[in-house]
Length: 344
Ligand SMILES: Cc1cc2nc3c(=O)[nH]c(=O)nc-3n(C[C@H](O)[C@H](O)[C@H](O)COP(=O)(O)OP(=O)(O)OC[C@H]3O[C@@H](n4cnc5c(N)ncnc54)[C@H](O)[C@@H]3O)c2cc1C
Image 1 (tube, protein in one colour):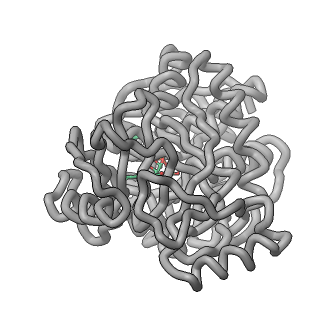
Image 2 (spheres, rainbow, N blue to C red):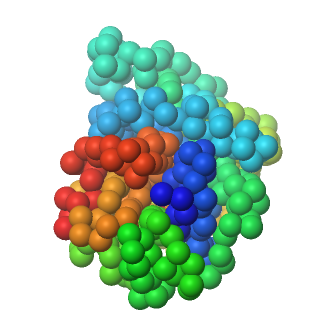
Protein backbone atom coordinates (compact mmCIF):
# COMPACT_ATOMS: atom_id res chain seq x y z
CA UNK A 1 0.00 0.00 0.00
CA UNK A 2 1.17 3.48 -0.80
CA UNK A 3 -1.64 6.01 -0.95
CA UNK A 4 -4.52 5.95 1.57
CA UNK A 5 -7.69 8.02 1.59
CA UNK A 6 -9.20 8.79 5.00
CA UNK A 7 -12.70 10.22 5.20
CA UNK A 8 -13.02 12.41 8.31
CA UNK A 9 -10.45 14.23 10.38
CA UNK A 10 -11.98 14.12 13.84
CA UNK A 11 -10.20 12.21 16.59
CA UNK A 12 -10.52 8.91 14.67
CA UNK A 13 -9.28 10.22 11.31
CA UNK A 14 -6.46 12.11 13.01
CA UNK A 15 -5.29 9.04 14.93
CA UNK A 16 -5.30 6.57 12.03
CA UNK A 17 -3.81 9.13 9.63
CA UNK A 18 -0.99 9.93 12.03
CA UNK A 19 -0.21 6.23 12.52
CA UNK A 20 -0.12 5.62 8.76
CA UNK A 21 2.11 8.65 8.18
CA UNK A 22 4.49 7.28 10.83
CA UNK A 23 4.73 4.17 8.61
CA UNK A 24 5.69 6.36 5.64
CA UNK A 25 2.43 6.06 3.75
CA UNK A 26 1.03 8.88 1.66
CA UNK A 27 -2.24 9.91 3.33
CA UNK A 28 -4.98 12.16 1.96
CA UNK A 29 -7.96 13.22 4.07
CA UNK A 30 -11.37 14.38 2.95
CA UNK A 31 -12.90 16.36 5.76
CA UNK A 32 -15.59 18.97 5.91
CA UNK A 33 -15.89 20.26 9.44
CA UNK A 34 -19.45 21.49 9.00
CA UNK A 35 -20.81 17.96 9.25
CA UNK A 36 -19.84 17.11 12.83
CA UNK A 37 -18.09 18.98 15.60
CA UNK A 38 -18.01 16.19 18.21
CA UNK A 39 -14.22 16.01 18.27
CA UNK A 40 -13.86 19.75 18.61
CA UNK A 41 -16.36 20.21 21.47
CA UNK A 42 -15.51 17.06 23.47
CA UNK A 43 -14.35 17.46 27.07
CA UNK A 44 -11.40 15.32 26.04
CA UNK A 45 -11.19 13.25 29.23
CA UNK A 46 -9.62 9.82 29.22
CA UNK A 47 -10.22 7.36 31.98
CA UNK A 48 -10.20 3.55 31.94
CA UNK A 49 -13.00 3.24 34.54
CA UNK A 50 -16.77 3.60 34.21
CA UNK A 51 -16.90 5.84 37.27
CA UNK A 52 -20.64 5.69 37.81
CA UNK A 53 -20.61 1.90 38.19
CA UNK A 54 -16.96 1.41 39.17
CA UNK A 55 -16.30 -1.06 36.37
CA UNK A 56 -13.24 -1.31 34.15
CA UNK A 57 -13.76 -0.35 30.52
CA UNK A 58 -13.51 -3.33 28.12
CA UNK A 59 -9.81 -3.62 27.04
CA UNK A 60 -8.76 -0.99 29.60
CA UNK A 61 -5.18 -2.26 29.90
CA UNK A 62 -4.60 -2.25 26.15
CA UNK A 63 -5.98 1.30 25.90
CA UNK A 64 -3.86 2.52 28.83
CA UNK A 65 -0.66 1.18 27.33
CA UNK A 66 -0.82 3.28 24.18
CA UNK A 67 -2.04 6.63 25.48
CA UNK A 68 1.08 8.34 26.74
CA UNK A 69 3.42 7.62 23.85
CA UNK A 70 0.73 8.33 21.25
CA UNK A 71 -0.30 11.80 22.46
CA UNK A 72 3.31 12.74 23.24
CA UNK A 73 4.40 11.91 19.69
CA UNK A 74 1.38 13.73 18.27
CA UNK A 75 2.38 16.77 20.34
CA UNK A 76 5.91 16.65 19.03
CA UNK A 77 4.70 16.22 15.42
CA UNK A 78 2.43 19.26 15.72
CA UNK A 79 4.88 21.22 17.94
CA UNK A 80 2.01 21.99 20.27
CA UNK A 81 0.79 21.10 23.76
CA UNK A 82 -2.67 19.60 24.29
CA UNK A 83 -2.14 16.46 26.41
CA UNK A 84 -2.60 16.82 30.18
CA UNK A 85 -2.23 13.63 32.25
CA UNK A 86 -3.91 14.39 35.60
CA UNK A 87 -5.80 12.46 38.27
CA UNK A 88 -9.59 12.59 38.39
CA UNK A 89 -11.22 12.89 41.82
CA UNK A 90 -14.42 10.91 42.12
CA UNK A 91 -16.91 12.21 44.67
CA UNK A 92 -17.86 9.35 47.01
CA UNK A 93 -21.52 9.48 47.96
CA UNK A 94 -21.75 7.15 50.95
CA UNK A 95 -19.89 4.99 53.47
CA UNK A 96 -20.57 1.99 51.19
CA UNK A 97 -18.82 3.74 48.31
CA UNK A 98 -15.90 4.54 50.59
CA UNK A 99 -15.59 0.91 51.70
CA UNK A 100 -15.90 -0.30 48.14
CA UNK A 101 -13.10 2.08 47.16
CA UNK A 102 -10.75 0.70 49.82
CA UNK A 103 -11.58 -2.87 48.82
CA UNK A 104 -11.11 -2.30 45.10
CA UNK A 105 -7.84 -0.46 45.58
CA UNK A 106 -6.37 -3.58 47.20
CA UNK A 107 -7.28 -5.69 44.16
CA UNK A 108 -4.18 -6.01 41.91
CA UNK A 109 -6.32 -5.38 38.80
CA UNK A 110 -7.29 -1.96 40.15
CA UNK A 111 -4.42 -0.95 42.40
CA UNK A 112 -2.50 1.06 39.79
CA UNK A 113 -5.64 3.04 38.96
CA UNK A 114 -7.14 3.81 42.38
CA UNK A 115 -5.30 6.04 44.83
CA UNK A 116 -6.08 7.57 48.22
CA UNK A 117 -9.30 9.14 49.40
CA UNK A 118 -8.67 12.86 49.87
CA UNK A 119 -10.57 16.09 50.62
CA UNK A 120 -10.76 19.43 48.83
CA UNK A 121 -11.87 22.56 50.67
CA UNK A 122 -13.68 23.92 47.61
CA UNK A 123 -15.85 20.88 47.03
CA UNK A 124 -18.78 19.45 48.99
CA UNK A 125 -17.85 15.79 49.42
CA UNK A 126 -18.48 14.61 53.01
CA UNK A 127 -17.46 11.04 52.16
CA UNK A 128 -14.25 12.17 50.43
CA UNK A 129 -12.85 12.06 46.94
CA UNK A 130 -11.35 8.89 45.50
CA UNK A 131 -8.22 9.56 43.44
CA UNK A 132 -8.26 7.92 40.01
CA UNK A 133 -4.88 7.57 38.31
CA UNK A 134 -3.82 6.96 34.69
CA UNK A 135 -6.33 9.61 33.63
CA UNK A 136 -6.30 13.12 32.24
CA UNK A 137 -7.57 15.15 29.35
CA UNK A 138 -6.71 16.28 25.87
CA UNK A 139 -7.60 19.71 24.54
CA UNK A 140 -9.22 18.17 21.49
CA UNK A 141 -10.00 21.41 19.62
CA UNK A 142 -6.35 22.38 19.85
CA UNK A 143 -5.16 18.88 18.87
CA UNK A 144 -7.41 18.69 15.79
CA UNK A 145 -6.55 22.23 14.67
CA UNK A 146 -2.81 21.87 15.11
CA UNK A 147 -2.74 18.52 13.32
CA UNK A 148 -4.81 20.05 10.52
CA UNK A 149 -2.30 22.86 10.23
CA UNK A 150 0.54 20.34 9.79
CA UNK A 151 -1.31 18.30 7.12
CA UNK A 152 -3.21 21.11 5.42
CA UNK A 153 -1.74 20.33 1.98
CA UNK A 154 -3.14 16.82 2.26
CA UNK A 155 -6.73 17.70 3.17
CA UNK A 156 -9.52 18.06 0.64
CA UNK A 157 -12.14 20.22 2.26
CA UNK A 158 -15.36 19.00 0.72
CA UNK A 159 -18.20 16.59 1.42
CA UNK A 160 -17.31 13.03 0.47
CA UNK A 161 -19.90 11.30 -1.71
CA UNK A 162 -19.65 7.49 -1.33
CA UNK A 163 -21.35 6.93 -4.69
CA UNK A 164 -18.38 8.58 -6.42
CA UNK A 165 -15.94 5.98 -5.10
CA UNK A 166 -15.05 3.56 -7.90
CA UNK A 167 -13.43 0.18 -7.37
CA UNK A 168 -10.37 -0.07 -9.69
CA UNK A 169 -7.74 -2.84 -9.69
CA UNK A 170 -7.11 -3.58 -6.01
CA UNK A 171 -8.04 -0.12 -4.79
CA UNK A 172 -10.37 2.82 -5.44
CA UNK A 173 -10.56 5.90 -7.57
CA UNK A 174 -12.12 9.05 -6.21
CA UNK A 175 -12.33 12.22 -8.31
CA UNK A 176 -9.66 10.92 -10.67
CA UNK A 177 -7.12 9.95 -7.99
CA UNK A 178 -6.18 6.34 -7.23
CA UNK A 179 -5.96 5.12 -3.61
CA UNK A 180 -4.80 1.69 -2.48
CA UNK A 181 -7.20 1.73 0.48
CA UNK A 182 -9.94 3.87 2.02
CA UNK A 183 -10.54 4.34 5.75
CA UNK A 184 -13.93 5.63 6.83
CA UNK A 185 -13.75 7.71 10.01
CA UNK A 186 -16.62 10.15 9.62
CA UNK A 187 -18.23 9.84 13.05
CA UNK A 188 -21.99 9.68 13.46
CA UNK A 189 -22.91 11.19 10.08
CA UNK A 190 -21.81 7.94 8.45
CA UNK A 191 -24.90 6.29 9.92
CA UNK A 192 -27.09 8.19 7.48
CA UNK A 193 -24.91 8.84 4.51
CA UNK A 194 -22.49 6.00 3.82
CA UNK A 195 -23.85 2.72 2.40
CA UNK A 196 -20.56 0.87 3.03
CA UNK A 197 -21.41 0.75 6.76
CA UNK A 198 -23.43 -2.10 8.26
CA UNK A 199 -27.12 -1.34 8.70
CA UNK A 200 -28.41 -0.45 12.16
CA UNK A 201 -25.06 -0.47 14.00
CA UNK A 202 -25.06 3.15 15.23
CA UNK A 203 -26.91 4.55 18.24
CA UNK A 204 -25.73 8.19 18.19
CA UNK A 205 -26.25 10.22 21.34
CA UNK A 206 -26.37 13.95 21.75
CA UNK A 207 -24.15 15.58 24.38
CA UNK A 208 -24.00 19.11 25.72
CA UNK A 209 -21.49 20.82 27.94
CA UNK A 210 -20.95 24.21 29.53
CA UNK A 211 -17.90 26.43 29.74
CA UNK A 212 -18.14 28.60 32.83
CA UNK A 213 -16.44 30.87 35.31
CA UNK A 214 -16.57 30.07 39.01
CA UNK A 215 -16.50 32.41 41.96
CA UNK A 216 -12.94 33.87 42.18
CA UNK A 217 -12.58 33.35 45.88
CA UNK A 218 -12.51 29.58 46.00
CA UNK A 219 -11.81 27.92 42.70
CA UNK A 220 -10.96 24.24 42.62
CA UNK A 221 -8.09 23.24 40.35
CA UNK A 222 -8.62 19.51 40.03
CA UNK A 223 -10.78 17.40 37.72
CA UNK A 224 -13.84 16.13 39.63
CA UNK A 225 -16.39 13.49 38.78
CA UNK A 226 -19.77 13.71 40.51
CA UNK A 227 -22.79 13.04 38.29
CA UNK A 228 -20.92 14.99 35.60
CA UNK A 229 -17.33 16.23 35.35
CA UNK A 230 -15.79 19.56 36.30
CA UNK A 231 -12.54 20.31 34.48
CA UNK A 232 -10.32 23.36 35.05
CA UNK A 233 -9.09 24.70 31.69
CA UNK A 234 -5.59 25.87 30.87
CA UNK A 235 -6.32 29.58 31.14
CA UNK A 236 -6.69 29.13 34.92
CA UNK A 237 -9.99 31.03 34.83
CA UNK A 238 -12.59 28.90 33.09
CA UNK A 239 -14.01 25.41 33.60
CA UNK A 240 -15.98 22.87 31.66
CA UNK A 241 -18.83 20.88 33.09
CA UNK A 242 -20.96 18.13 31.56
CA UNK A 243 -21.58 16.27 29.49
CA UNK A 244 -25.21 15.26 29.17
CA UNK A 245 -26.48 12.16 27.36
CA UNK A 246 -29.62 12.58 25.32
CA UNK A 247 -31.00 9.79 23.15
CA UNK A 248 -33.51 10.26 20.38
CA UNK A 249 -32.70 13.94 19.70
CA UNK A 250 -30.01 14.49 17.09
CA UNK A 251 -30.57 18.22 16.67
CA UNK A 252 -27.31 20.07 17.16
CA UNK A 253 -28.85 22.89 19.13
CA UNK A 254 -28.30 23.58 22.84
CA UNK A 255 -31.26 23.18 25.17
CA UNK A 256 -32.25 24.92 28.36
CA UNK A 257 -33.12 21.55 29.90
CA UNK A 258 -29.51 20.36 29.58
CA UNK A 259 -28.14 23.66 30.87
CA UNK A 260 -30.31 23.44 33.98
CA UNK A 261 -29.42 19.77 34.46
CA UNK A 262 -25.67 20.57 34.43
CA UNK A 263 -25.96 23.63 36.70
CA UNK A 264 -28.14 21.78 39.23
CA UNK A 265 -25.71 18.90 39.25
CA UNK A 266 -22.75 21.25 39.79
CA UNK A 267 -24.54 22.80 42.79
CA UNK A 268 -24.35 19.45 44.58
CA UNK A 269 -20.56 19.83 44.90
CA UNK A 270 -19.87 23.54 44.49
CA UNK A 271 -21.65 26.34 46.34
CA UNK A 272 -19.89 29.41 44.86
CA UNK A 273 -21.28 31.59 42.07
CA UNK A 274 -21.16 30.36 38.47
CA UNK A 275 -21.33 32.30 35.20
CA UNK A 276 -22.02 30.40 31.98
CA UNK A 277 -19.84 31.57 29.10
CA UNK A 278 -20.83 29.08 26.43
CA UNK A 279 -22.88 25.94 25.81
CA UNK A 280 -21.67 23.42 23.21
CA UNK A 281 -23.42 20.52 21.54
CA UNK A 282 -22.13 17.50 19.67
CA UNK A 283 -23.29 14.05 18.61
CA UNK A 284 -21.35 10.98 19.74
CA UNK A 285 -21.01 8.14 17.25
CA UNK A 286 -21.99 5.36 19.65
CA UNK A 287 -22.91 1.84 18.56
CA UNK A 288 -25.71 -0.42 19.72
CA UNK A 289 -23.38 -2.62 21.82
CA UNK A 290 -21.38 0.44 22.97
CA UNK A 291 -18.15 -0.89 21.55
CA UNK A 292 -16.14 0.68 18.75
CA UNK A 293 -16.13 -0.66 15.21
CA UNK A 294 -12.76 -1.21 13.68
CA UNK A 295 -11.30 -3.16 10.81
CA UNK A 296 -11.77 -4.17 7.21
CA UNK A 297 -15.01 -4.53 5.30
CA UNK A 298 -15.79 -8.24 5.00
CA UNK A 299 -16.76 -7.93 1.31
CA UNK A 300 -15.17 -4.79 -0.15
CA UNK A 301 -11.45 -5.30 -0.30
CA UNK A 302 -9.31 -2.46 1.06
CA UNK A 303 -12.19 -0.59 2.68
CA UNK A 304 -11.52 -0.06 6.42
CA UNK A 305 -13.32 1.62 9.31
CA UNK A 306 -12.48 3.39 12.56
CA UNK A 307 -15.69 4.58 14.09
CA UNK A 308 -18.16 4.08 16.96
CA UNK A 309 -15.85 5.68 19.52
CA UNK A 310 -18.84 6.73 21.65
CA UNK A 311 -17.81 8.71 24.71
CA UNK A 312 -14.28 7.28 25.00
CA UNK A 313 -12.51 8.33 21.83
CA UNK A 314 -9.48 9.82 23.60
CA UNK A 315 -8.89 6.64 25.55
CA UNK A 316 -9.48 4.27 22.63
CA UNK A 317 -8.12 6.02 19.53
CA UNK A 318 -4.40 5.35 20.20
CA UNK A 319 -4.85 1.58 20.58
CA UNK A 320 -7.53 1.16 17.91
CA UNK A 321 -5.52 3.10 15.34
CA UNK A 322 -2.52 0.90 16.17
CA UNK A 323 -4.62 -2.26 15.63
CA UNK A 324 -6.03 -0.96 12.38
CA UNK A 325 -2.59 -0.03 11.07
CA UNK A 326 -1.35 -3.53 11.85
CA UNK A 327 -4.34 -5.05 10.05
CA UNK A 328 -3.84 -2.85 6.99
CA UNK A 329 -0.10 -3.42 6.72
CA UNK A 330 0.54 -6.80 8.30
CA UNK A 331 -2.84 -8.52 8.24
CA UNK A 332 -2.98 -8.30 12.06
CA UNK A 333 -5.97 -9.56 14.03
CA UNK A 334 -8.73 -7.46 15.52
CA UNK A 335 -10.50 -8.96 18.46
CA UNK A 336 -14.07 -9.98 17.53
CA UNK A 337 -15.82 -7.82 20.18
CA UNK A 338 -14.65 -4.63 18.43
CA UNK A 339 -14.32 -5.87 14.84
CA UNK A 340 -16.80 -4.13 12.53
CA UNK A 341 -17.53 -7.45 10.87
CA UNK A 342 -19.74 -8.38 13.89
CA UNK A 343 -22.39 -6.04 12.47
CA UNK A 344 -22.46 -7.40 8.91
C1 LIG B 1 -20.49 17.00 24.59
C2 LIG B 1 -19.52 15.88 24.32
C3 LIG B 1 -18.53 15.60 25.24
C4 LIG B 1 -17.62 14.56 24.99
N1 LIG B 1 -16.64 14.31 25.89
C5 LIG B 1 -15.73 13.34 25.63
C6 LIG B 1 -14.68 13.10 26.54
O1 LIG B 1 -14.54 13.74 27.58
N2 LIG B 1 -13.77 12.11 26.24
C7 LIG B 1 -13.88 11.37 25.08
O2 LIG B 1 -13.03 10.51 24.85
N3 LIG B 1 -14.90 11.57 24.20
C8 LIG B 1 -15.82 12.54 24.46
N4 LIG B 1 -16.85 12.75 23.60
C9 LIG B 1 -16.98 11.86 22.43
C10 LIG B 1 -16.11 12.31 21.29
O3 LIG B 1 -16.40 13.62 20.97
C11 LIG B 1 -16.36 11.40 20.07
O4 LIG B 1 -16.22 10.05 20.42
C12 LIG B 1 -15.34 11.71 18.99
O5 LIG B 1 -15.31 13.06 18.73
C13 LIG B 1 -15.64 10.92 17.73
O6 LIG B 1 -14.64 11.25 16.83
P1 LIG B 1 -14.75 10.83 15.30
O7 LIG B 1 -13.48 11.25 14.67
O8 LIG B 1 -15.15 9.40 15.22
O9 LIG B 1 -15.98 11.64 14.72
P2 LIG B 1 -16.26 13.21 14.54
O10 LIG B 1 -15.74 13.99 15.66
O11 LIG B 1 -17.72 13.30 14.26
O12 LIG B 1 -15.40 13.60 13.26
C14 LIG B 1 -15.77 13.24 11.96
C15 LIG B 1 -15.24 14.26 10.99
O13 LIG B 1 -15.60 13.83 9.66
C16 LIG B 1 -16.30 14.86 8.98
N5 LIG B 1 -17.22 14.23 8.02
C17 LIG B 1 -18.27 13.41 8.30
N6 LIG B 1 -18.85 12.99 7.16
C18 LIG B 1 -18.15 13.54 6.14
C19 LIG B 1 -18.28 13.53 4.71
N7 LIG B 1 -19.22 12.83 4.08
N8 LIG B 1 -17.41 14.26 3.97
C20 LIG B 1 -16.42 15.00 4.57
N9 LIG B 1 -16.26 15.06 5.92
C21 LIG B 1 -17.11 14.34 6.70
C22 LIG B 1 -16.98 15.62 10.11
O14 LIG B 1 -17.39 16.92 9.77
C23 LIG B 1 -15.87 15.63 11.17
O15 LIG B 1 -14.93 16.64 10.92
C24 LIG B 1 -17.75 13.79 23.81
C25 LIG B 1 -18.75 14.09 22.89
C26 LIG B 1 -19.63 15.12 23.14
C27 LIG B 1 -20.69 15.41 22.13
